Length: 278
Length: 130
Image (tube, rainbow over all chains, first blue to last red; front, side, top):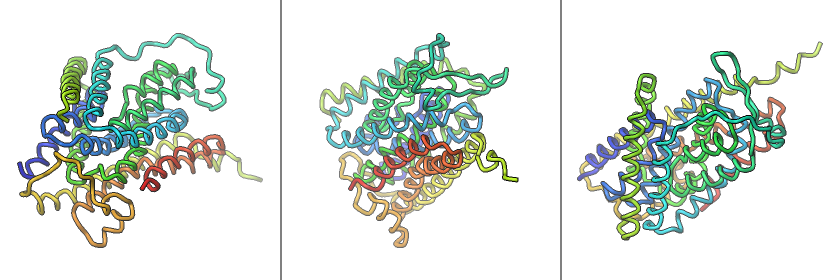
């Protein structure tokens, strides 16, 4: 395989991943790294570096659209970004110290967990809870547009959410993923923020989180232009097409299919990591 | 008569608009630069063999902002792609930097401080780790 063919294959894989990621809302980043490592034999560190940069592209592209709809809460996002960016820098430094085989196992486990999460029902209503005084002091409470006019919400368990965000950031920096699923859990389940606000704010935060670790990756020479170019352009094209089709798509079956693919890739990553083939 | 204070403030919605535009242009500009460098890279190296099986790390001039940005004078396709990627990484950083200004104009001191913390972590990562 020469550079032209290799670039085309990586571009097509990334395009498909970005397309499915946008349609299912799961993000395409998680499948690109294992696909490049398992199918094309790319070194895990190069694959992680390339995917991380593509995560910034999709997050920024999607956030540009969401932010105008008025769902994302910039104060919540900015406050929690303290935790995610610090976590991301720690994760990126840790990635350099951990051998590829062990990193592969961690990647597989996180992947398996996100596959399982994707099968769960989402957006269950929250029971009424007293607002966290810290949330009041930080003015995190907000409102979002609904058919019946602006609907206000309160934010609880700020400290738990903040800690979970550190973990989400660390995983993002360690594995080059967006950790959107964990960010949504932290906001939706722990902090009791409405689901739509959680997902759009999470998307908004992913780019900043990924940028925090991307700097470390760049300085360490993990970001290869020849490999990252088709990944970024592929994911960007795929996710733009996916987002455009989103309105009419039946996503339930797709989510299941995507979850299955992610699950299989996860098991193979763990197996290859344990047998020292990465 | 003094102007009402409201006039000097930006509403949250205006801030959202600017951020949305900033992100969109950042992504489009960087994608265009990456695509340009990518096309050149394919033309120049398309027939050679890729080697990503073993991790070697990028050469010094593709690792630091100084090397990448300074390298544009001595134009090279891999440097052009890398410049596009740096623009992409810089897009969320620019968004955070703009938020500092926006919170300042909203007279929200607590959030100016919070946003400055985030911005300094980002700049530390981009500039200060080699």
